[in-house]
Length: 604
Image (cartoon, rainbow, N blue to C red; front, side, top):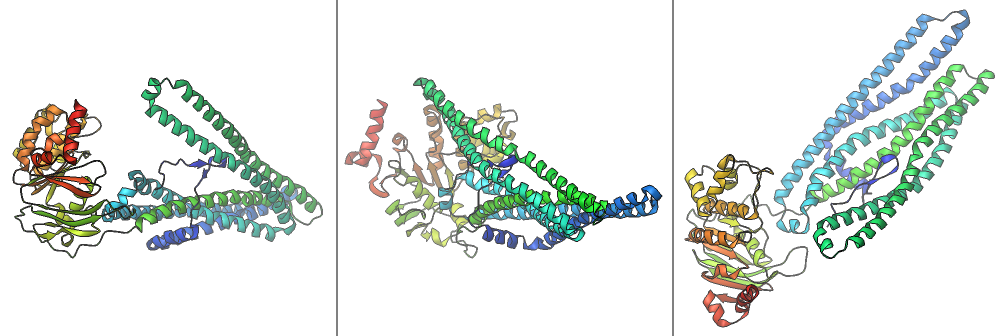
């Protein structure tokens, strides 16, 4: 599983020291193919970038002409018409270049945002088509990171890197060509002066990178230590461990200070080096240019042009390095996104028709069920068989890891069987669509789920035209009606961070939701685990009323709550080791009796 809490490393001059992708070329091919429908917009954008850069490269030559024209007219009179004519050409060149640059930015932003929108849409659809085992091995934070951070990284990187890379390459190559066209001696001088400076600068950058890596490693360690210390603040106080934690923090903090000092000092040299490279190039151009002017090899205007070309030549090198780094970031994010999009999906069931009638009895049969998760060789359910008649209350008990919740997941087709079958009213669930299977169940889980909406909307989730009387009756049955009416807007109160609900109240809401759903089969997975004993006793009658006429599967650790079950299935290591009602199992004095008696021993 990938770590979704990784912090981005910062490189020289505050740039991101990105994670390198495993397959840079392959991922960018996928990104280009994925962007195929917008390729025309991207190509037009890149053409605008090239033309804009070329127009800007033509400007220095015209500045050279206007300089020579002014110098020639100092003694005899300046040709104003000629100066104005060249100025108009310069205005056209620079304004056209600026306009094309704006068009390029707009087109690239439009195409990359469309790509990111489609990626989010595809991931949203993919989420609903993935099997549950994928979520068992992948954290929610990791999936959210792919939907948000990774796609944002792709969009921003494509928007910035592609256009900047093309512009910088065009500027770099074009400035070299224009310098050699103007004067090859001056061109060689400018290139040698700049290259010497860049070699020195990149050697410093290479040394600073390891200190940035150390800084981020120490930063991660100190963040982890602080988070751990705050989470265990009570334990630290109870064991008087403040001094130990303080010393550990001081060591980490000192290591972070030393690495950050070295990294920031070296990275702080980058901007002076860039300035030095530019100034060194200007000095070299001026000295060589002066000698050539003295020998009447070039005009003074050529020196002016080369002063600009030196800047145009040195600037793209750092931009190319930054664009390459950004493209690596996009490739690393793209690998994660395309890995998610290429994950194995559930079987398509669009061709399956409904098998159950409107009058579902609720007979359920497990026949030699065997199951193990796809990402592990460990079998959780070995050979499970049981017959449940309509209207029976079936309790499933056993130690942690026995396979109780897994059995419910198989019943709901959240997971698929390795072998065997589960039938509802004689029809195997594998022959029914998942939607048809799940439409027969209402369930209350240990982990409550409420969304930001009104109390009423949470109670009637995915149900239409539910009478108000039915909602009120269910809430009264679970003892929640009075509390809801004390809320600012009653049943129309929006559940958000401003409305504080206890864990027990949230679970009462989910129990009322199950009552309102009124399905033939009921699943209760530790449904009253967050409710105090008094409230549990209050709603137990309502729960018993809810179970009448319905096939009910109850998972409970408090065995006192399932004594009235028609059948109790005792699971251990994925197998049924005992079955029967409460009295029968106690009479056997087996595993169930030990579990039941141990709870009262603990209470005593």
